[in-house]
Amino acid sequence: MNSILKKFFADLWVLLYGLTCLSMLLLASCTLAKTRSSIRVQVSQQYDSNSVRVSGDNVSGDFLTRLLLRGQLVIRESEHTIWGNLQEGGKIFYHDTDEDQIVSALFTGYSYTWGQDDSIGLKLSARDMTQYHHSRDYLQVSAAAFMSIGLWSSLSLELLAGARHYTFKPDPVLVFDEQHVRFSNTGPITQLRLLARLGDHWDVDVFYGLGVRFFDDDAYRFIPDDSADVNQCPGEHACLLPTGSKRMDYRHSMGLGLKFSANWISDYVLVANLSYMATYNDSNSTGSTAIWNRMRAVLSVQLPLDLALHLMGTVQLSNFPDGRNLLFNLYEPDADENENSAVARLTWNFLKDFQIVLEGAIYRGAIPLGDVGTTDFSRQTLLLGLAWALPR
Image (cartoon, rainbow, N blue to C red; front, side, top):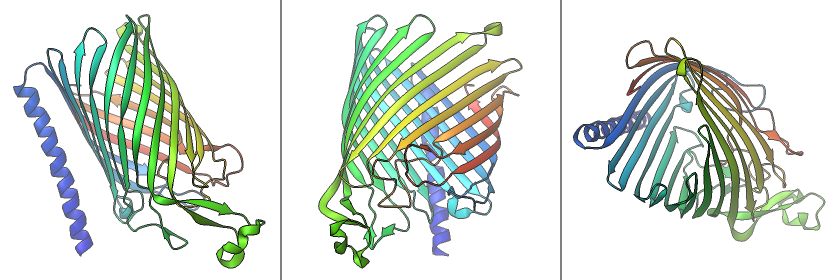
């Protein structure tokens, strides 16, 4: 009974929090000059063929209700700009209630602009995911100062430096070989980004980022069966032992993005995005070094009869030089079960501010490079929803 009450009051708090923030956005948009705001509420029914998100053949599906609240607000006064983006999402399953999920995300910031592309400011973000009786809960917050410099009329450079904190809050605590698993980490982040406008239709985005992550957990070393040190292992078999130092990762990321936008038949808008990102996680803990290569394509097209089509696809190649999950064959916070995906979404504005949303998606695990001993991950979803948005 206590767990039920705890779940009820937690859900109630999140709902009230989201409604309060949306109300503040509405109030601000009505009382402040030079503001731009938008609100979107969506309620959907969905079928998920792999509701517990596990690999292998023994998977089961379930129906669920999805809730989405989204609000945006931009306030401009002379050279000063304040912005905020709030997102609240929830999943409520019919039978697999342990998979119920609440996700909250807040992005906000301030900038001071002089000239056309010159500005300085501050960006703040927070993201929280909560699942009852599960091991995927986390809270991530970051703060960074940035400076944008216009090099030429169509070229600008952005510098960013700050810090990030990730709190892994599983319930119950994960345990491996009598060791508590602690993925929580803190560290600095830096990024260099180059933005270019090529003509009337093309935008180019190139970036490089470096982050250092200091973990609460220990760094481990792997002792194989044929090693002379195997007698240090319990039972004299291959094992992972603490090195005596804390885990520390260097996270390198670089990428390229292309955006094309134009009008097509009857002046309807067409937008296409292509992006590639490479990430190298260099860790002092055996089994945590990883290389990810991710390609993503998005096509959004306005159609007659107030229809809009969105097509999204992602392909990820993953390489784990030490062998994947040598330490924990359970859950990796930096990995996503939906790394390879194809999503098609059709929306119809059947009334002034209302939409019907139809979406189908196919998800697969990352494509492994090398022998990493992974099992196949497969998931399909189908969604039908009703949305209210202001403005559209």
